[in-house]
Image 1 (cartoon, rainbow, N blue to C red):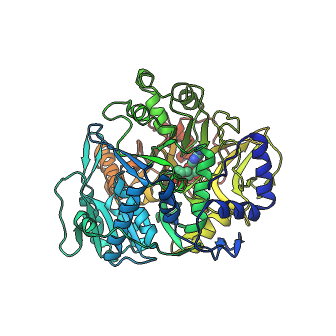
Image 2: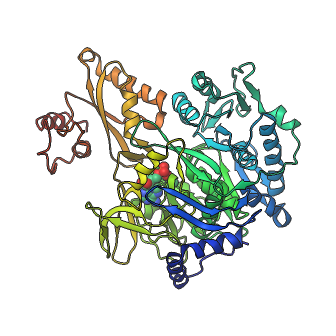
Length: 636
Ligand code: WT7
């Protein structure tokens, strides 16, 4: 089982070549040899890249939790599946073995069934990074319910729009969450969100922080008594390969979040295969990914990928700076972590602290260190390499997306030589292509273009929940017959890829994917605002920060500007979440627009960066005169 580790560079090239020549044969063998199935597939892949219809392992029957839990019990029952490290280092760590995980998921699955949850029902989960989060997700998968985890930093209205979009029947939340020295009342956010969510019948509440909460009669139930009363034995639901496993929302270029739908078999095969190879996972490793499970990184590389490999995965509730800025290094030392996977924004913020914080810990257990979520700049790469990896651990810079389900371009550690700021080479089965503005494929190296993928891979999201047309439009229309990633990339002289950033209206702030449209919609709710345009500008720690250009209505002109700025940011916090707050706000008279009314964001971006040198072609502008005024009043 799980003997698919690539051992050396010639082998990588050999496997890669084979995987491209005959992807069906390649994935057939991996799926066949490394997973447990109730029934094999009749066809490996069925696809139409024009209609955006993709099916993997058609006809197969499985349950992902059997692969992530049950099959490990015989040999690894006493091995830790999860090591849970609480926010407060004085609280005891929880070590959850595979045997215990089996019991806890079985009980939770029975709780869900007792609440009338059936195969295909949607369950939204709004929980902090506590074991219950993982257990609830697995319990959903066990009974075939579709989980949709909503990051527990989202505001009430962001929660409501997601719950309504997928028409969740049940919501699971906690009383509160710990974040460093703060306690956040999560239940009150849910109470507000659920004022306008008719589909939700019940709310299960996990006790974590013991703060006071309102329990709505007939709707809200404490989880604990139900859980205590539930039996362990639970027969997993037999799922079709293409049955939905989960929905995860991501921002797009309209205000409505996109519910990316992942399905059972392909997602399982892809997350497990990539986990093993990108992290060089070996049997007794202690693997730690610091992402929140509320994002795809947590789904694929805290939960499903590691557990499908029978790994030990660390779940960390806290923040890198609490109680002190060495918490990450302390946890690595404490649990003898062998693989550490984090985000460039975290690396940059910790690199600003004195290096004594990291030097005082023994990090010699580390073998592989990883980066995800945004391009890692040269300085951060070197700091990570020098201080954390001690120049001995390969850095796996992993490029992928919520939509791809798993890592697409990344070095295979100890196999692919790394290169700072480069995600390097595609994993087996992945065929990146660069496209030029005329939609032609760019062949050859030392070039750049729009990054597309040619052939489907098992982990690709199958649709946007309830809106297949939007899925097709967003990903398969710009370059017909190919999946368009939305990213730009360059390919160096040896074929290594470097991701240069988003080409659309998505801005990555501290590794969070934010669409400009939802932020602009939220600002538009302010009675004094006529119109706004949001752009990103480079930020030392966050990678990008948000710069807002805002036009006031006549009635807003007399208002105090500083108060307005505060109100606008509060509004953004309330409608989306604090992560989307603007760092700089400039009130303007007008925005540069094309004759067709489209805002010229390119120019606004350059002004925000303070680069007035070359605005490119402004001849298509309707109102070129506004640029001078915007430049003169730029917030530095
Ligand atoms: C976007 C996807 C992948 C899981 C977390 C984010 C950017 C991601 C890298 C990387 C450069 C990266 C891309 C991508 N991105 N990883 N290693 N180097 N850029 O998932 O929220 O769906 O965001 O994150 O722009 O399209 P996501």
